[in-house]
Image 1 (cartoon, rainbow, N blue to C red):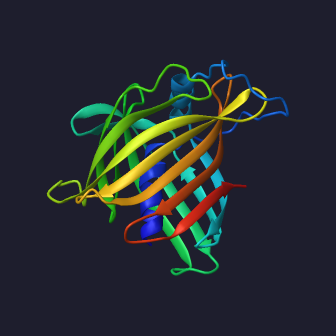
Image 2: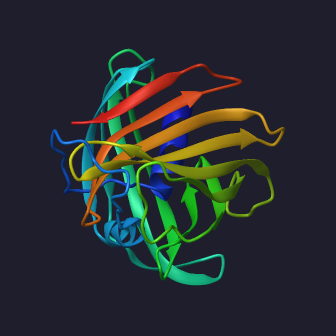
Length: 227
């Protein structure tokens, strides 16, 4: 299903979600800083499993499993890779079940290089280093990607932009919202995905949700909420 392929492609690149964190009833300070870069590096180096409830156009459940980073090379650059698998089922959409596996590539500092999803796409990213620290209210575009139908790169299918917004939460935590916009070769917006995670002062991440809204050729809207 197209929605799963698209969701996987983005999840494989920037899964800002892991165990740890948590909030309280106290409003956070807008001057409190959070160690985004080191937290993200620690996250990608480890394996994780998250389960989600799906609502919106389709309803159901899903599980996302990502392996720990292992040595790999992408487009001639030595670094590491992780393998992510999405499995799940729908109660009101077809096919009734889905499964997809792909690989994300990073350099030795865990800066994203690209991703490969068999039968879906092959993306080559141009990404700047994430800031060492962020605070509520910070926003920035930090990357773009050229997307192809396969690793031969003979057929370009579109582009993506990556940005983030640091949103208010509670207590000593903030929400990191990674926003991906995907476009076709005519520069028409195909979908916008917002992947929200909670970060604490130690740089630990907790998955919150994945919100994907389709555009132009599709009006589907689904929210994946972590169980």
